[in-house]
Length: 118
Image (cartoon, rainbow, N blue to C red; front, side, top):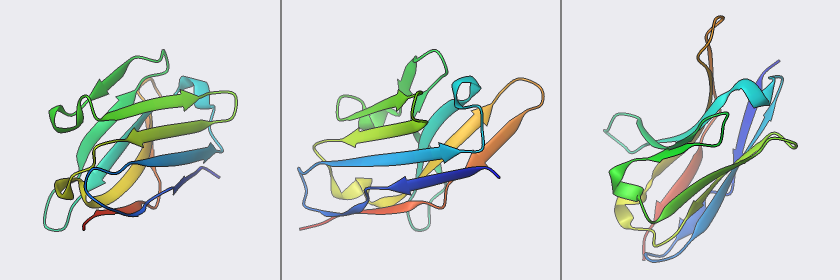
């Protein structure tokens, strides 16, 4: 059974920092591209940051220079370090695991709430 379990969300003041974690199980972690997405109320889910199985990263323009994604393949973990948080970063953050080779697979975590407010 595949599970992606996020943790680390919460309430933080503008300018603050948080680190989200995603623990994966039930998959061969090393062959999956991993990503963090977010969805704010009334908006579509969007990619925040991705890291492929080779460690290459990509970021949404809105978070470049503030967020950093990393992976620990030995322990099947993905992290999202978020600095200089803004109110517009408020959303539910989801972890995603994607296998782009046949058989194509995509898995999601349950999400963790991040609220940036004074």
